[in-house]
Image (cartoon, rainbow, N blue to C red; front, side, top):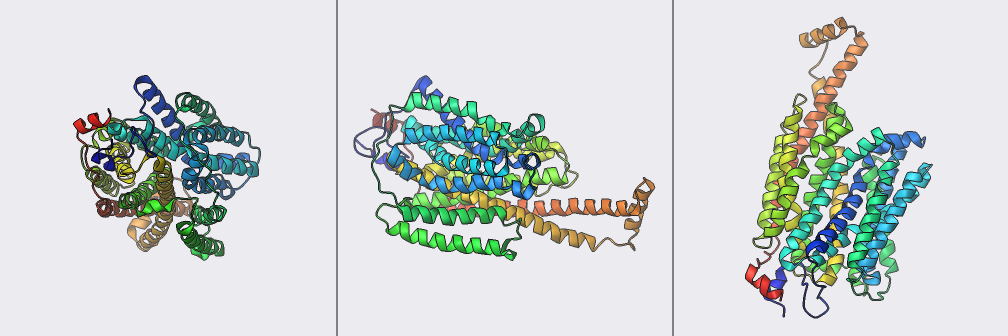
Length: 531
């Protein structure tokens, strides 16, 4: 019998009817299953960022320019963004377990082929395949984890998932830089092979008897084509916009028009199609759309700063890729400590309180970063990263609890696919906006600082004299001064973006409270509902 409290829980693990899921796993099997699913998720998310720092090495080995080499990132991002929202449809056709394991094995194969590529064209083709087959992995790891835990511990399942999803983008550049510096760039792909094979083997062993129902759903070819067109155009526009000077480029303008028109057509078609390729009816649920919106915008701001920090550290503070990664790595410490506690308690209290707390902590650490200067030391830079772990722990779990509240297990894959699509797209938008604004504001500050430096200034004359006395020519001295101005300009620009990000997180708290509160379930009710 379904209790009233089921309306506030992500899934119902026992009982009869189409919404009922399999019984939860227990003991060692649950630990093993959680580890396998977390490994698959970590491997997937890691691959979205691990190649970023390896682009110069890849471009050099394949004898192409750095701008051509960035297609290694763009190709994966485009294919992945298209595939993620198809998870719900593919799960209905093939079953969650078969689809998940097949995706892992194909991902492993594509990773091996990427490492074997001998030309940029080959590498891009294999990265497209890798991104496409990776699409269902993150949403399905989420839904399979939820189906493995009792209702009372659904928060713990989401905590495990969130830790891997949020920490992997931070670890990616650190690991990618170390592998590229100490081994060779193909190994950033080869490391997926043993991890993927292990994850696929364990998942199949534990879940092959827990397959979800399948049905022959007609394929919405028009909706699929529209999705591929508008998402592909949007993703390429976001990845290449800064490089091509945005709307000063006719290519970017064309891509923007295609994305806008394609999105409008896709929206109208999917809302009127009897068997849509993406289930947009989920957006009628207040908790789903408000939670997804808060998750997407919050993640966009978070990820924009994740990208900005190592860029500033390497370009203007003289940090290597490895040291820059080490500055950001402590985020995982408190995240690992606090995530289990949040997962255990999120169903006892209003999830909106946890998410609001997370946004306040994000605002605090970004305010701390907005006070950085070119003389800020390593420890001072690292402290906000350490504190950020608390926010990471309280960010994903409550919002995903709100998003999934009231949904039956058969709706979880589609909901996970759509919410993760929104999150990934917002991350790409955040990256583009932050990198563009950073360069634009740095240009402004450079011009402003140069106005105060001229040959009539005693300080300028003394600096040039000091540099020339050290053995530099006057031209070299002027170049050194320009480098110092650039360092200050980019630091001021980064500080501004950190400050604006802090304000955005405070403002985003209002989005969280648009959702209806998910009712807390007393332990006694949970116990009686489980029997």
